[in-house]
Image (tube, rainbow, N blue to C red; front, side):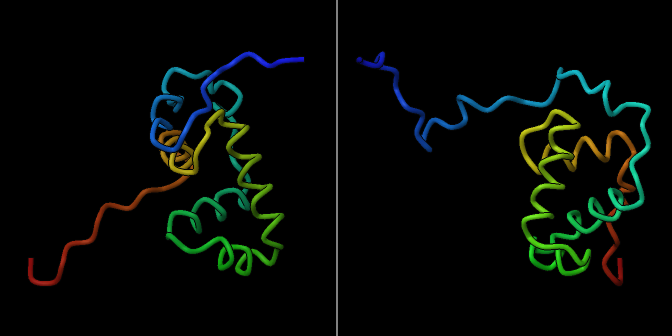
Length: 105
C-alpha cells in the first residue's frame, strides 16, 4: 500500500497553515460566565508566570493545568494560548488593566 505524496509542513511554512480565530463561531462561550477558577487561571496566565508556577499556585499537577488550558481553548475554539487570552479579554472574562505610567511621566 502506498501513501499519496503530500508535502509535510515544516517550521518554515507553519505560518501558511495557521488558522486565525477571527470568524469562528464562539457562540458556545458567548453569554456564559466563567467560573472563579477559570478567571483565576486566566489571570495567572496573563501575568506571564510559567506553567509550573501557575500549577503550584493553583495546587494542581502540571498535567492537570495543561488539560484545563486545552479545555478552555477547545471551548472557545482557539488554537493558541495567545488567542485564548485575546478572546477571553474580548469576552470580558479577563479584566485588562491599562498600562502603568512610569514614575515621573
